[in-house]
Amino acid sequence: MPLTSLRSLYRFGFGFCVIAAVSAQADAMSLRNAKLEALSFSALDGWKDDDQAAAFNAFLNSCRAILNANKVMRSARPMLGGLFKACERAVGAGQLDRDQARAFFENNFKPVRVMPGGQPEGFFTGYYETEVEGSRFPSDEYTVPIYAAPTGTVTRKKSTVFSDLDRTKIEDGALAGKDLEICYVKSPIDAFFAQIQGSTRVKLDNGRLLRLNYIASNGMPYTPVGKFLIDRGIVSKEEMSMDKIRDYMEANPEEGKALRRKNRSFVFFQETPLRVNDECLGAQGVPLTAGRSLAVDKRIHVYGTPIWVEAQLPIESEKPETKFRRLLFAQDTGSAIVGPARADIYFGHGEEISHIAGRIKQNGQFVLLVPQNVPLGGTTVAVAKDIPLPKPRPGLVVTAAARTTTPATVNVRAHRHKPRP
Image (cartoon, rainbow, N blue to C red; front, top):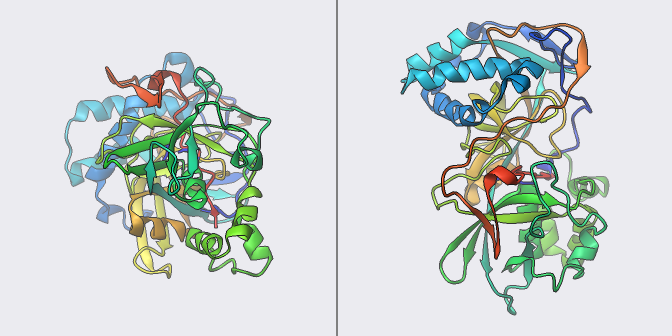
């Protein structure tokens, strides 16, 4: 995962502690701690200007997983059942152009604005896949290990290892001698940010590219370290970004080390057979699409749900002046992504992308596209069901050094703890 695992102000600690909620009726849905408002597509600013053909292709990625859902899973979550039927139609529709794709979404979904805790807007941050230089072997230059999880300890139901070891103990060498090192990088800061984002591209000193995704964590709570810089008056809340955190750590090595260790959570990786042009896998188990994939609260939203976003974001400059009006899809999650209208936008990889993703922290309209056959409302009850992953492609094997496991048996969440700068 991805850009895991984890995959922002870390990402600022905003959000509501809520859980997925559905109607006591088998065919209705609602969200606790959020007001839902039915809209028309004509009410969505920029709807007709978006490239719906590109959105449709991203939706087809999600359908690979959704169509694995059995009847029991679909009946337990109305949204999943509705998405299943929409996916059947999408797969049967073939290749669609922009107008045809827009008609598909309008014919199969209805827009519903989510207003969390009485607030009119949701909150958005950004994430990306990091890039670092590394080596398979330690040296004076490459000193910081990137760890895999022990063989056989991680399954789809369990993704916690070394729960007795916090970041400080691990960085001080508690795992030395256990043969878990996948590779080594130059900087502990690079390793830290790779863990936050949940995936990384390691450019090895032999010229090869190593793709790593989240596989597990030590299970300790994630702490957004940016808040300590804000509390100390080092960086203002308005200026806080991942770049600001990195700048502080690089300029103040010892203080930066202490700052990192305030986040006791630690992430472990797995090697993936992704190629240079492949995007990393999200928690849904499908490749993410830059600018079309969202990380959401998996306790609330069903993977594959279309979500319309309207916001002013700092993309073209550091000021939030770029109009972002786009249909995205819930294909990932993160421990810092909590709440019914909280989402993290995946921007891809590259140095410029990292700067853009790291400064996103804006409010905006969070609009679900709910399948036409799923009514709203009803008495809410808590649910927490597993969401299907896509069937593994033949011959697809995920390796971690000498360790091997298939995607069908591992947790591929992009566990990003995102910096809430």
